[in-house]
Length: 99
Image (tube, rainbow, N blue to C red; front, side):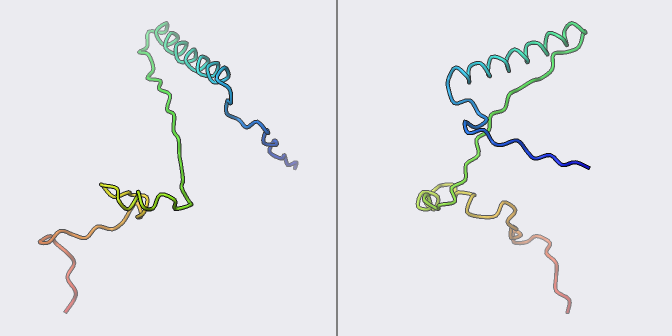
C-alpha cells in the first residue's frame, strides 16, 4: 500500500491575484454555462438552471467589533449560539412537574 502527500501549497495561492486572471476565469465559467444550456436545448431539454454562487466568509476572532455588535439593532447574532433555546410563550403547554 502506498501513501501520497498532498501537493505543496503554491506560494501565490490558488485564487487569481490579477484582474486579467480573474476576467479569464470568469469568461471560462460563463462559457461553460452557455455551453451547458446549448447542449440541453440541442437535446430538446429545458436549459439547466446554472448559477454561480460567490461566498465570502469572515471571522473576527479579535473581538475588535464588540462595541458595534453590542449597539447593533437587531442584535448581532454572532454573539449567541445559533440554536439558542427559546422560552415558551406564556399560556402555552409546558411540561408540568410531577407532584
